[in-house]
Image 1 (cartoon, rainbow, N blue to C red):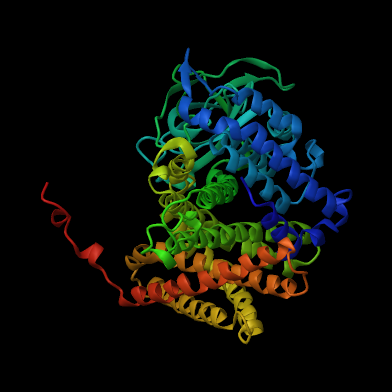
Image 2 (tube, helix red, strand yellow):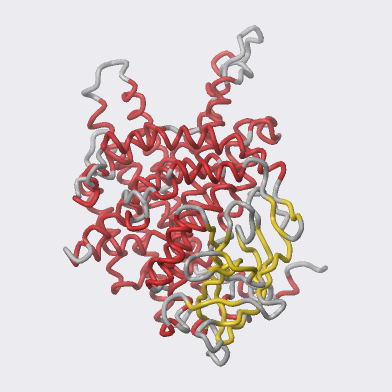
Length: 607
């Protein structure tokens, strides 16, 4: 379930998809056709993927004869997905794609993930792996792998995590031994590999981090290899097994339709892989993998808003239909008819809270997509403008992943609370959304890793200019709307939040420069939340200002009047109820409490 009007608003009123489509490279794709894409993708998601969501959760994946069998209907849905072209929407026309803007593809991805998160992980991973080969592979590798991976003939994965290492990727022990023909013998075990084995595609191309014998320790010594499940010749014909075996699948809290695998490479000494790119790519694995990881982090953000939106809209539907209790106006009158629970104040508060967060998160992700498209279009044409847009992509990526993941789980939890006892049972599907959503803050780098990436790397990129441009954009909006007759007070909250964020940034930089590094991880998550809240407050108020500018010229009864009213109150609510938390968090950082460091290990519990 989705509110298509919000998608149209973001694409055509807030983020200017029509301007992007005016570029000659998108010839043949205009606003009308983009709207048709949205409508058809939504229908496909509801009719094909949605009915399999509960099936995948109930059945899960099975291991049969040493291989994964996906839930009923997944294989047929995979075929329909690629036949319809939904996974090649933004793929280059060179490889049979449609070459559409990322901004439009982001909208489609939300529908696919919202309908069936677990299923959509399989083609999503194949897409990410293909894009990495597209970026770093040799011409021969691109010719062999890309078309097949983009069009669903072959799947793909990313293989980083090992049992002894966890998130400490630099401790990987998987080995790569050079063979005379330039390939490598691979040996090692990888765990938590999403889509590591399945029956949807005829082959699976693993992108695997391993250490070439004699390479340095740590992440600097890792190289990235293409390791297909089944060996193929230069023409793409499958020639036999590649000694990649399934060690088992995990039994999880959610996303049960997605196979999370233990994979053993080279148990019998017969696993062969090749470096991504030429021989000069040795020891460049982490640099290459970061492209796939960044794409995956954005995908997790899309998964988060998709699950949160579905939970919110289903809770809204229930609240409109469920009658319970009298209106507060007549609570002493036992004869008063029961009213829909949407009339109760606390339910309305929860619904508005979810609405504001969902629509703000979606705007944040669409904003990142818009910046990505402009960065691509401006490359080689306007260096300064390209640097601005690419810098915002770099800055926003960890926020999109981590803040959206945390908020998605919170929205799903609030949706359950809105239904009361009915939300806790499986009949309405919201409890599945909640279970599925918990993984978002964990995989593709835990949210703390995202926070440390933000404060440790992204704040300093381009000499801190990316953050300065972000704050400058917020400041320009504040200056233009501080005296707004309707939104002025709310904009004041945004101004104070931005000031608090600026002060917190200086404090964080002071800790780095002053050698007080232990304080950085204590507050990195909090700092990321502050940036996320400031960004959402800004984007929601921008939406409200746009809506108020259009609402008054519409005739009474026009549906857009109610839509724009919703934008106004979502923004005002978030400004008054959430943005003050940015100031509070800045004060907490200023207190520099070190209790978590000072407490002894024995003092946690006497057990």
